[in-house]
Amino acid sequence: GQRAAAECPNQIEAFITAAKAYDAFGRPAGAARVFADGLEANPQNVALATAYADWLLSRGERRQAVAVLRRYVRDTPSS
Image 1 (cartoon, rainbow, N blue to C red):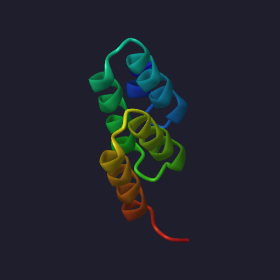
Image 2 (cartoon, one colour):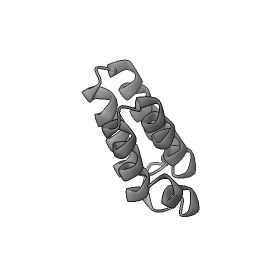
Image 3 (cartoon, rainbow, N blue to C red):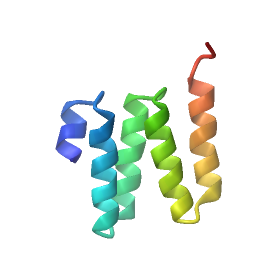
């Protein structure tokens, strides 16, 4: 989970799995930290940004979810 994410920062699924594990164990601060670390390492990854925003929305944190997606759009060059 978190160790795999830290050792392989380009393994997006490791970040998502670790964050979900923290959430499942009632540790939302840990989940948020893992998601944030993942986006720090992979700011242009749509799967990670979407997973983080979905998680925030599931917690009723709409403003934070919008901020995550805005940051993704800002950090991703248009094609």
